[in-house]
Length: 104
Image (cartoon, rainbow, N blue to C red; front, side, top):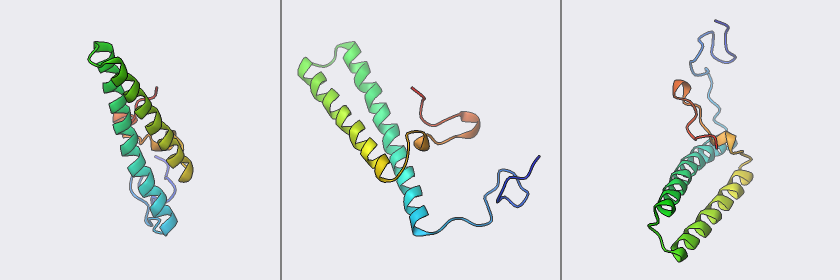
């Protein structure tokens, strides 16, 4: 198996050095937090769509929910832009399980 850069000849292991400069730490923490928020946002969106499809909401509730989800998606875009991240950056690869977030 070919050696991966920074692994010291052991594929799949952590590199000998972990980036600890404050900018990298801040960006990585932002990436993790935004990934969790994006996962929750997508779950909320699916739940809302299910409730709409089942007819469990009044028309005004559907409107409020739709507006709230749109605002949240817009805020997520602004946060991604602020930290220089893309939607794909937030989709953590879980190895054999595949990506964390579904690809719409």
